[in-house]
Amino acid sequence: MARPGGAAKSMGAAPVGKPHYWDLACAELAAADPVMARLIATLGASHLVARGDSFVTLARAIVGQQISVRAAQTVWDRFVKAARDVRPARVARMRESTLRACGLSQRKAEYVRDLAASFAGGTIDPLALPELDDEAVIGQLVAVRGVGRWTAEMFLIFNLLRPDVFPVDDLGLLRAIARHYRDGAQVSRGEALAIGESWRPWRSVATWIMWRSLDPVPVEY
Image (tube, rainbow, N blue to C red):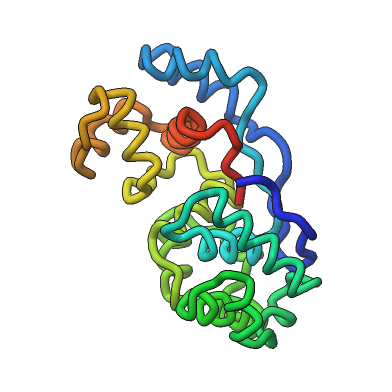
């Protein structure tokens, strides 16, 4: 996704800039996989960028659940305009009707407010999350209503910049694998996992490259 308009000012700011492992990951992926080598050659200087803080990353991921990148960007822009200050304490007080008017479904409006309350009330401590391993982070986040494994994996990739996350339930990732590795034939989660084994320990990077192969607009949360 494009970077969020109206940057949030809440807690748990993520690092900004190219991940320190990016160049090494691309070199090793290209050496191990001819498809990756071809795709990486088209990227130029593009790379994963973490923008926004912990709350923004998760809120954007909820907004983006099961809709296209462009549709999610439109809804997010409306949400930022309505909120004016995208901090947990502010968002927790927003009316569901206001959130619905931004384009959020009833369920997503509830989820975003619940997420905000979890941050504002201290149920989620964004300063503690970087100290946890991937599965422990996922375990904490999925305890919040509306945050499933996919949303938590987006957080690991885009906020904590973890290098080896493989969101195998992501439809865009599966579509890209089908296009580049199966001549367009649909792939199962098991087949995707098998293909992804050769991308360890850089599956986050490989996933981002797969996304970019479908859409030139960088995916950012």
